[in-house]
Length: 198
Image (cartoon, rainbow, N blue to C red; front, side, top):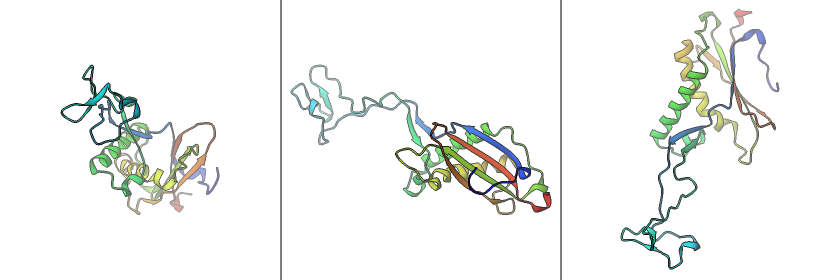
């Protein structure tokens, strides 16, 4: 593994999360949206067969059916990609809360074999290693890790009795390992940095 090394004897717990949660479902079925008067309309709807009804919504004149704008996505789940960038660009509070809650439930479920940590092993470090391909969006590791890191530390309070204060957690390294085989993994490693444990 590239970068710094964690001494094997210091590892308290390690878990590989394959295909970790990357999206949160905001709604199970997207509602249809319609073309309204004053909004640009595709060329195919500028023919005589189409016009606007009394509410200003584009319809098929013969059938009186409203023309659906989001044909490809209507009825499909509405997903939100998890990104720390959203915190800085003003994501509404209710969406931030929903994302955090979904990620928290995911971690609590996936880390269900993690036990309370012996107090003698504190302070600890919590390493997060993201394994994934560099896609066209070429994301940055800080934005990717921001929400996962915050929620993971909150979960550790519940699971292992470790407050996220510096008394208990003194290292939170994050790293990225690029892959070309399509894998998407989050490797969580909890390790002691207590020198008296040697």
